[in-house]
Image (cartoon, rainbow, N blue to C red; front, side, top):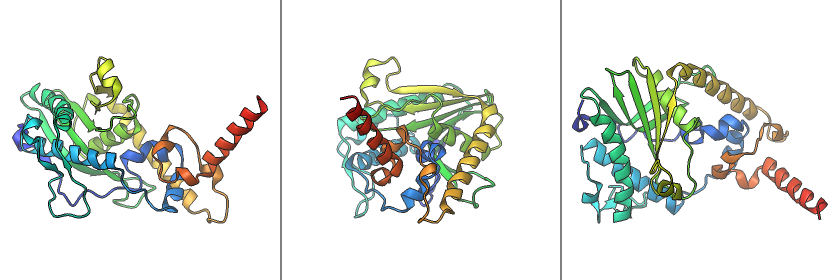
Length: 285
């Protein structure tokens, strides 16, 4: 399959899951976060997130149309949803095109490596879990390249953000995407590689990876991850069954995943952690 025959997902398949990949690290570590987030209004998307959506749309368009040079779109406004008042659009600057180009180069390098390599773009998948209703746990991959002759799958995730550098090693979000892809297709695999393309962070300039970070995910661990995911969803749903007037504090666990939690500002566990830190500081005076 050539890049001009890339398989894309229909636009209507773009809703977000309460148990999606982007929040997998959060709910798999903090079972109570799902119920707590449901109790507060969702955060409005930041300008940075909206710009990331525009950059994603540019990368998706290029891959689906076999374009290898993102710079030809400099000066255009993305996403290409003219007339929509719900979507903030951004001009494709030279900087945006340069960042997306790193993503395109990584994907095309994998696609060009073998004549039978197949490119899949924005492919949706669902997890069949005992703890979840049909269609409740789902997601979609930015892009992936499958090479049948090698039994090789490479799952790509593009991150436009210039702030926090995301580590690919044992990354639950990327494992979610890989497992979702594998369990929904009859592929024989010997190798799975997870790739985060994040070209705008400081370490992209100082580290050898150049903004393209890779980690190998053993195909034999896919079912183990699915089981771990099933247990995490079950725990989150068990918390939801606890009446709101009763304490759910024991189900809340603080950690790095709190950074992007919609309910972080009202989280009792974070409040307790902050209070204990202040008490400790005071005791050490």
